[in-house]
Image 1: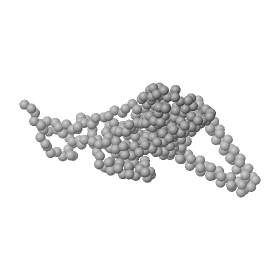
Image 2: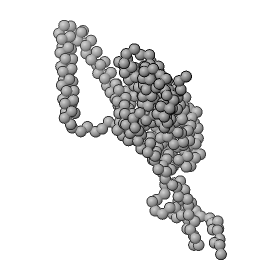
Image 3: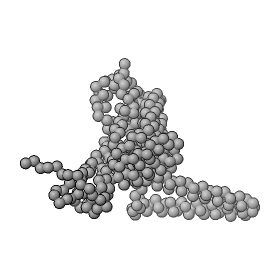
Image 4: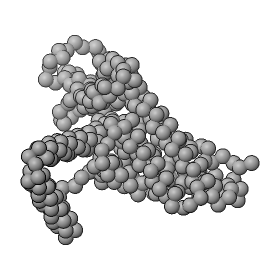
Length: 349
């Protein structure tokens, strides 16, 4: 005889034997509702694995963090040199102020006023640098937390992280509509993974388009200018300036313009990401396109250098995009060089 399907039964939600699907459940056996006849299992959520590309991004972000000071020979040398320089500057400032007072009291007071302005500006710069580094660290931590919450389908963590994401762009008027949609979704959607996907599609995807536009523009400028540049030294200076500007611009799109220390931190993260992902790996089929189309034979040496410099700029920009993005790519496909700079692969006529 075939078994009869379980009959509907009434139960209380506050029953200790009941666990609501989506709520934080105990590590004990998956939530089930038992009866005198047979158990009725409740669906168990599967955990999605974190892909290798996301692990590379997280490793690059960790590499860019300012590490705890560890005494080394080079560190001792630079620490001692910095201390001596600070003492020398302080003695020079003191002697200057004393000399001004010796000449005239009014000159001494003016010197003291300028010294106070310098000190106030120095403190302000230090505070701004610290704030910029803290903001980038927060975005990197948010990125890792989003990946973990989506893999575990953690509803509580997803709601908290989406709230932080909305707060991150609270001062950006152009994100007002997207923020409102995400907040509505946070109240309506129960599943954590779906909520993260909605936030990525609605709030982060427009930022991706802006960042990709910046990468395309920088790659085009680099390829054109270096193709007509008369000297190699000009190429190096221009490419370096474009890369620095591009990294700063992408960081500004996703979370705020970094200061000097923030730019150094981003540079370390971007360099680590390029190393982890294979250097000039510009995407599947790109090298085949370059060879198969005979691009090198159709272009002059200078044009070829322009194309390679454009590829380098686009590759660095994509690494900066992956590192600065506050959430991993899930429902949106990660862009490649062919996506952001297709003009570099057009067949010569």
